[in-house]
Amino acid sequence: MASGNDMKAANETYEGFIGMVKWGSIAVALIVILVVGLIVSHK
Image (cartoon, rainbow, N blue to C red; front, side, top):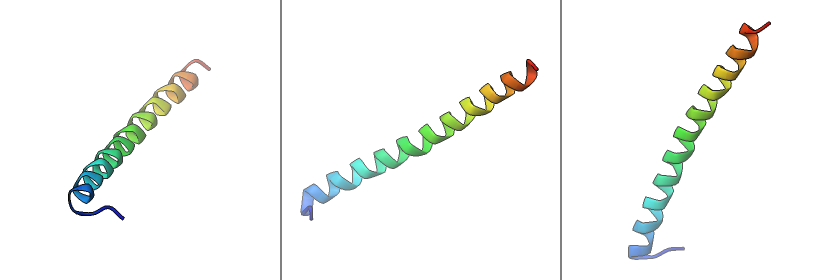
């Protein structure tokens, strides 16, 4: 387990990672919606 200052750094890294996962998931969802919309509109 991390101690003292290491725990603070670990929490900051974790929060950054969770933020990237959240925004990355949103971006992927928007891209999927765009691609599906393009495919459907060309049929």
